[in-house]
Length: 233
Length: 233
Image (cartoon, rainbow over all chains, first blue to last red; front, top):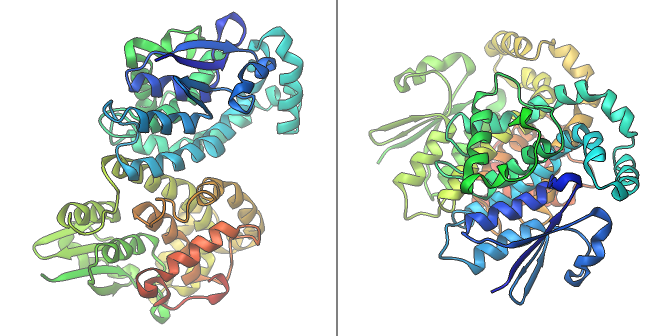
């Protein structure tokens, strides 16, 4: 069966999209290796066959699945004999809660920090689009965001506390082994690593650093296989 | 088998402890009805047999279990034939993450709002203890916290966003039926309702309001069975 994943492609082969990393790692968790096709921000028409223009989009034989959560559910339901992404119905329901916490908590805190760096990393002909949409979203220019970085980093620290607490108990959010909620959270750190040399973790974040390293090591170093700023590795 | 739950007791039979509501609702979820014994803040010695002085403490036959999470795990493991609190191993792992998010996100945002009201609700001879410990924790006097309430309410709204998003999809955090993660989050709203007439939800929070009502209705209205400020019901 043909398995194709469309994901965001930036300059120098960088792959910072956290949503696409969710899909990449979920596929690897299921033991699946897709053909990966990178798209610029301005190439959304290339996935218009999915009924929308965003990535990730997974083509799995006859199935076309857009949206990272829908992809995770598709993989869990279509490959039930491979390791579970959710660990049962309770895990699926609460993975969705973690999904929302990542989107509206963790990513909300990280995205204004990383945005000025991403502007430098997106493809040259994506820059105008990226600047315009993100400045509208934040209500601040890229330059204003850059100036605010120290305050944004300070505001991030308390947001990380549920992760810190959980990782002080078990190696992964999902327990002794990683699963989808780990990929949800890790996608954000992979975004940072792909786009900039800012390490958002302090030296005191021992457990979070260890977890991040374990996540980078998964699946023969899949998340290490793309260009990155090593300072944050 | 004797089943006794020690929980926090405030003036006028109020029961605002969110930790104790986690235990109360987890017991009801398992179809268990404990004898409930209320303790003042200054009566911690009455549960010293548990090796510490905080509530909730559950005595289940020969087992003595302190801490709300340990109580949930004890109930899940000891009563496997009753409805599951977690919905499988993935649900247990991520319920623990939700536990940390509630403690360090939701409760962190709510507790400075409710503290001045709780001061008025704790037993008269608990007041000095309560004021001293909470003012030290927040680094602000009760009067300073009360003055800051509008700003604290404004800061709460984005914290609620993962709940809003999740409850726009299914009636409960855990899906079609409530489970332990719902009790974790609801305990905070029950604390508010038991202690004050401030409704922290805005009129736009339709799904959260509906969920809160459903939670109050559970188990023959268990959470309605204690004194409360009805404004927030």
